[in-house]
Structure formats: C-alpha cells, structure tokens
Amino acid sequence: MTDTTKILEEMNDRSREVFRRVVEGYLETGDPVGSRTLTRSLSEKVSAATIRNVMQDLEYLGLLDSPHVSAGRVPTQQGLRMFVDGLLEVGDLDQGDRKKIDATLGESDTDVSNMLDRVSTALSGVTQGASLVLAPKHEAPIKHIEFVSLAHDRALVVLVFADGHVENRLFTPPPGQTPSSMREAANFLNVVAEGRTLSEVGKAVREEIARRRQEIDTLAADLVESGIALWAGDGGQEERLIVRGRANLLGTDAEEQDLERIRTLFDDLERKRDIADFLELAEQGDGVRIFIGSENKLFSLSGSSLVVSPYMNADRKIVGAVGVIGPKRLNYGRIVPIVDYTAQLVGKLISDRG
Image (cartoon, rainbow, N blue to C red; front, side, top):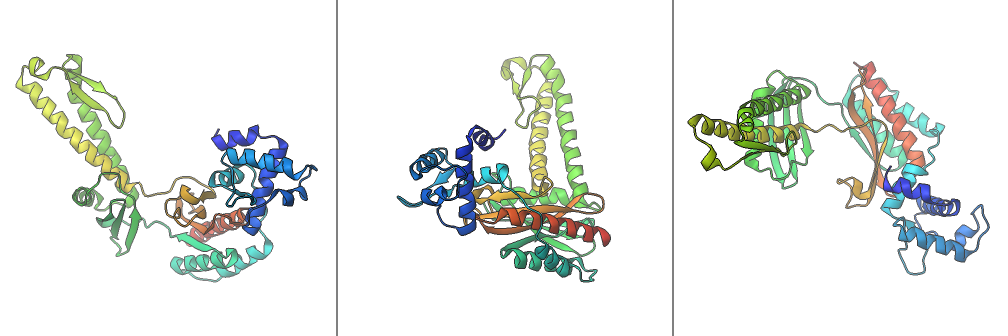
C-alpha cells in the first residue's frame, strides 16, 4: 500500500469530498478553489470556516497548497497523484472523439510511418495537447552499434540494422560512465551483435554475465573453503571476495594466480553489467500510465503531465507507445480513455499489417 493510498483510506467522508471537489474544480478551471465556493456544492451543509479547517488539514498532509495568502487551494503533485490513483472517475470514450480518431486512422495506407504520423495528428487535435508516438521497435539483425556521450546524464545510441534502417535513441547512461567506457561497450556489442536482433543481443549479454559469475564462483570455492577468503554481499550486485591476512595465508603461486584471475573476472563482470544496463531501453508495464510533474524526468521542468499507453503486436508483445503531454491540470478522466483506445487501435492496425 502506498502512502497516498493509506492517507486516502484514513480520511473521513467530509475530508475526502472537500479534497475531491478542490481537485476537480482546479482541473476544470485552473484556478484555486475557495471555501465559499465549496459551501455551495458539498453534499453536506457546513460553514465556510469548517471547510477552511479541513483544507488546512489537507494542506498539512501535503495534498493541497495555497498559492497566495487568503486565496483558495490547489492540489500539490502528491495530491494529484492521490486523486488519479484513488478518486479519478474515468468515463467511457466520447463518441465524437472516437469518430475523429477512427476517421484519421481509417485511411488505407500500408506505410506504418504515415499511419503513426496520422495518429500523432489525431491525438493532438482531439486532446488539444502535444502527442507522443513511439514507433515499433525494429527487429532486423544489427549491423553496427555506437554510443555517443552528449552530457554526463544523456547519451545517444545509434543502431544501424542489416536492412539499412538507422535508429537514434536518447537514454540516461548508468552513473560514472565515460566516453571511453561507452566505446568499449560498443566494441564488445558489435562483436556480439552480428546477425542478432537487439533483443537477442540483450539475451546474449545476460548469458555472458551468468557465465562470468559462474567462473568466479568456481575459482573462489577452494579459497573460501580453506578460509583464505570469504564472500561479502554474496549473490548481490555488489558482491566482493575478501582475502583474509593475504600476506600470511597465501603460500602457493596457484593461490596467487587464482586471486588474480578472480580480480580480472570481477572487472569483466562489472563491464558486462554496464553493457547490460545500456541495453535496458524498453519501457515496462502494460495499460495506461500517468506521470505527473517530476515523476517523469523529461517533463519535470515544465510542470507537465504525461498520459501514455503501450501498444502490442499480434504476438502480444509491447512494440511502441502513444501518449499525450499537457499541463498537470489535464482532464485525466477524458484523456485516459482516448489514449487507451488509440493504443488498442494502433496495436490492431500494426497486427493487421503483420
């Protein structure tokens, strides 16, 4: 259970209704909602002073904020998240919106790129927001991979496929990576990638990591059994082999060679793990997801929200996504069914085109 879910469950009916009315009023108008406004709409007849006390309690919980002294309240990001997760009423797709989307996508076109362009245009037009459409992942064999460092927290992977298709993808690299470590990762992947799709490359790297881990275990077993070394954080991502009193305990060249071999394997294991991190580019999860404000690093600075849903091919594999970007006071109840319907429709069209 999340903290916001727990807060919602512990609220009494009056607090829950005041909170819901404030959020709905803000989403509709963009303006702070005052206590006098609420006295006219609450199901329970209470004074403005009582409502102000409830609002103060909700502000103390971090769910509401007052942008100006003596003004009404607006929901915080935490408050919007709680509303979306626990109180949002998602209606059926409006028939007018449905017809506009169907009309745009109903045109006969075998070109997937043209079809996705029309999806983007349809979503923007219907929602009056910016649209986001991620094209299906290309599954042809890889010919060449290159990583380009753009900043300490941004990098570009250039994928050249055997059929001539080229893709550029922005991603956030694992912390501490340098241009030279990215070149090393690309060199390794270009050897592994020949004749394989991107998903097959990821599987090959994970198998390589498992092999390295097994080699370390095998080499270290005798040293651990004899008391020369012990595992710290055994089995985890940060496991280490600690040598006890190395100068006194190590008596043979074989033991020294084993330790040097283990050190080399550890270094190699860390490099392979970094490479595996580079390949983790696919989004997780199914269904419509809502990211509010700073929950999405791409849009946190502009205070926007993202409503996004993946779409699937005929094999029920997630191959892309469609979404809408807008202000945090989006009409979520209307946008969610639009995005959901569009994602399902695109998935069907992609499946029909094979």
